[in-house]
Length: 168
Image (cartoon, rainbow, N blue to C red):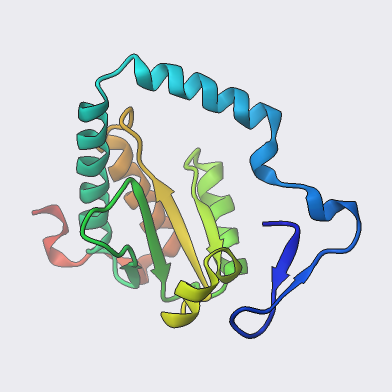
């Protein structure tokens, strides 16, 4: 991700000069240790229950987000995972979404921004410059999903008021 940048046309890229081209965020020792601990925690659970729980929470999140004006859930595929990806009409750029991400982080809600360079072909085909991603996990609660949607709506302001069926 950091060793090269995508060019303006599909299939073009430029390799970063210097030794930094060999850096990879996937190689972080701290991240590997954390992944090991997460794997141990997961293996102590029932994997089938975990998968069902993740899908159920993500479905609730997608459903709740579908009622927020100006927010579009962008996930594709028949089998959807716990990563929920949205675009926001009033925040069309990566920088605007990053500002929102930082405001949500102050509320202790972790999201991330996917820029076009992270998934260039898909985002070019769908004309999406950037997306906000939220991930649910089997240890999350429905109350936390509700808190995320409520916080997102508060950050977006009154123009994003929930549509009438949101609390059905």
